[in-house]
Image (tube, rainbow, N blue to C red):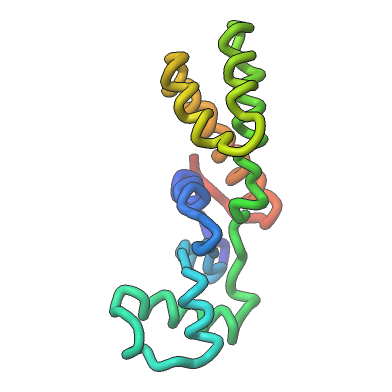
Amino acid sequence: MTIRVKLQDIVDELQSQSEELSSFLNRETGELILITGEAFGAAERNEPLDDYPEWEHEMIHAAKDMDENPEKYIALPSQFDIHEYDIMRRFCLSIEDNDISSYLMRSIKGSGAFRRFKEAIIRCGVREQWFAYRDEAFREIARDWCEYHSIEYEE
């Protein structure tokens, strides 16, 4: 059975990930699943569901199923695979106004780069451009991921 996913759903999952949240695609159903590290731990330790809030029960069940049937699931690229810093750098270089481009490049140097960049895009009036650029970068990552795993998608 061939699954088909909406590319925007993959993009949304990619943008939701963090150190504590990972996303997976169920190869059989096409369902996207976001799972916390805590849910993985609970599944691994086979802890009673009653020890967790109800909203986490489905995640724990999915984590158990992943452990028992790993072939059913594909991990989406993690935040570490995505390299959002590099996306920011490429955006800075894409700005045609050299003054703005240079200012943005300086904003991403050193500690606190993400916070400074957020302030800089607002100050420079390129916030909407940034979000459009970032969304397209995530779409490209999602397309590449789908094609690599032979997953059909719709734009």
